[in-house]
Length: 261
Image: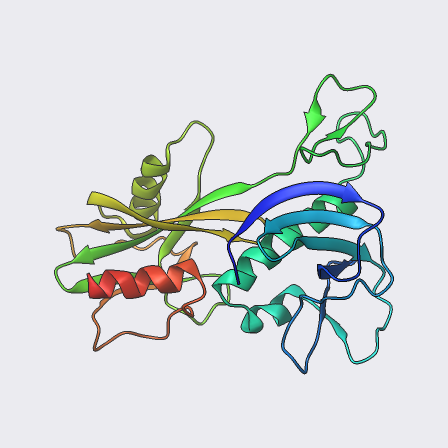
């Protein structure tokens, strides 16, 4: 797929021969089980929607629809979509589902209870009694893999996941990204880190996070686990690596990078 750039424009006369993505008002994605695809070159009669990406070979349009059956196609929940995504399609899906939720679900002013305006070109919605606009929420979140020699530290969170993964956490008000990394490591496993290095970032739509990944180093091996957050934490190397998140996720990419660097 050619390089794409985010944009936002409401349109009511969208041509059929473009790239279209359909998300229902119940946040399900229209999916073709035969082609394993969710981008369609037909608007299926829906001429109203939102241009959300520009690219060299045509734009991508988001349509928010009722989840009525369309022949040979199905509507899928978010967790059902994940196995069919790669890095490029994840970016498209991430922007699409978060915009669809913002447009469909955030419809009343949290302060006054008034119905908000339709979404504007800058994604804002306004209230007649407010002096400011409301914008979509995005939650910044860090990931960090701590290294000690050839070993890396992985944790299993107390959230039902069967993966060992990177330490993770949300950025607090008044906190820097780097400060968040150091705090989360200390809170979850009780060690201090140094040589903090940025790796990469990823939009993560489960539900609306901007993930930022780091590696770090430590001279401390003994761990003090926060049992409210963490079930297990241990040191691993390439020959003892447990089950980790898939490569499509930033945590999966970070773990593999830390082992190979």
